[in-house]
Image 1 (cartoon, rainbow, N blue to C red):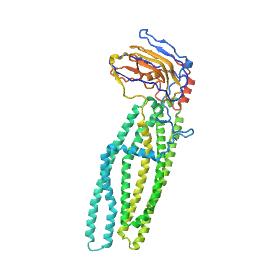
Image 2 (cartoon, rainbow, N blue to C red):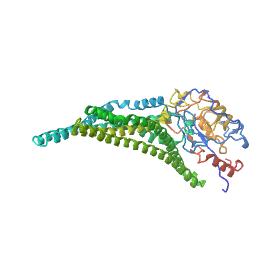
Image 3 (cartoon, rainbow, N blue to C red):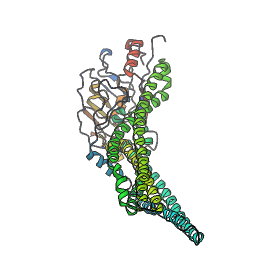
Image 4 (cartoon, rainbow, N blue to C red):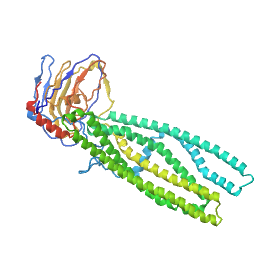
Length: 555
């Protein structure tokens, strides 16, 4: 076995059954992207049901065997566009295109469209949110009245007035707590239903795609999009939206009450808001771009772990454990670097918002003290104003968090929109049902030229012809990489040929088949692995150096 890895031939068994159904679609060959290099010899096999053996029509010579098909590419690539990576970029450093205001508005509209089926629950939740916010924001005003009662009436009817006022406020606060609890429940249910529909839509879109799409896009990335990105998007449109509405409502009411209590003091204090809003917009756009980069990097690390763990035997066979450890460590290190950038941006922004809130409170105390000294405010009004200023600071922090989380949701949603909107290149669940009496089972490949979409420069078949008469049993035998599994892939229309015809069912084009298997109709054993090992080109060269075609076992 030293230096020799035997390759097992593939055996394809086909037998006709009585009970079967066939769907057939017309097909028009479309050229693949990229120039296909000419190579490989044309060849074909003709099957004879009565001869009892196979006669080789034109078997390719060993020197002209086509290249082995490429399996799922481990590098990330967009399904409907070109790769955004540049030469020399580190792993995971795919830079998304700059998102302008128009793109943000379009993504925000689509994000809100996800919530439309839950509009009644969300409307009820917003109603309870309004009740809760009004009660919460009325608390400083009533507490200021309580302070005035205590300060201006220290004796006499103080006990009765204070008891009645506190009992009334307790009942109001209890109603506010109940409204807030109902709001949280409705938002949670609506969010989970949105995530459920989003995941179902995403999975349905993936199931409709052609096989070539999965050759370009890794399983790890798709799983990451289907799990974490959908959850992040669902939170953005429900819980985060609820928190943003609450913060916005509380900020609006608090500002209005501040002007109601003291217009002069409110004008002086709120001068800090416009520059803070400008900083928030700049921060949100930067965070959106950074979040998309982080999600892409996480998808790449998930893809790497899924492939290596799922194919540990292959990694162990080549003794590449340490190399794969280093690769994964490099991936997660890049994720960590992006997370550090996000943490630094969030720390600076929230530090600035916290400082602005403290400055607002300090400004209230300074200016309010001067107004009290000139008898323009009472102690109760200053206390109410101070609490409203405190709520404005909290609301500004809530709005900042809402905006940052919304940008994160939009960043994660960009790739989801691409995957859900992608149209499959091959027809899905279309065509007509043929009468089973018209199906005789004769198949023919005529002058087929084919290359796998992941490797368009390496032709697998060139001028390939194969005839399979009805009722025959056939075996395709040959060394690894000669195209045996590719014949089955073309038969099932997992791929389309570049040129040539697939014919069957009394001469009709056999471009797509869907079997309603009631008994065993077709058994296929693929020789190629589901996944090529890491560094596939290096491993393939290593295999070819250890086991040349001259040493391959013959069937």
